[in-house]
Length: 251
Image (cartoon, rainbow, N blue to C red; front, top):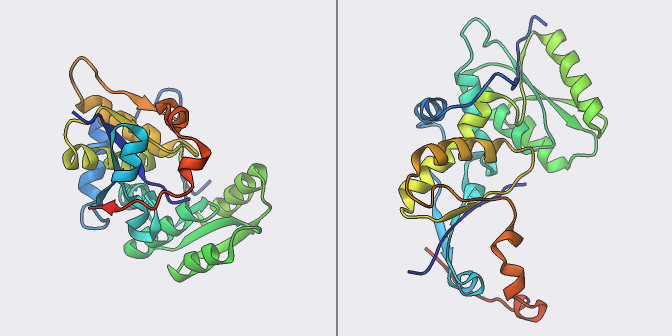
């Protein structure tokens, strides 16, 4: 799913498998290096506002529109960083498992670097997702729609191809790449009080948390919200008032 990060301010084998380990920590320096690596390969996505949602939330909201990013989601940030950070002697092929977005992103990153990409995709995935992956020049490898099958088929593909497994959300370089969103939004909208970050596998959340928490200072520090209900918006909005929003989207 392509998501936008929401920020709030009150009105006023032969292959290499890179994974997170208990001893590993993504640092601010990692995110800074990721920002340098991906520059020129990704968009600096716009921040949009909506006066109707501001009124419902009783806050000024800013939407970081990563759905306007290359390949249609933030995933290209982590994919580009991961591929470009591979040692030259290991950068011969990449492998991942994905329902679509990370697969598309890694396929494009591999195409840019001129190496093969093998994307393990559940056989129930949308045809448009598979088509997009193929369109970026990657090979689609089918698997059953279970976590176990994804992992097993991906591991077998790594062994057969000698490729590097780029995990969708547990690869440190992927996490660091996603963290660059945090840098951008702090530059675009100074003085934020909170970030609302969609959570799937957690890679984007972890990267942004590392970046923003290291940079934001002051008595409030960094306030991180996991779910929209934590802003208590639901308590302020009835079903009847939600239906006919008809609000304007302002630049």
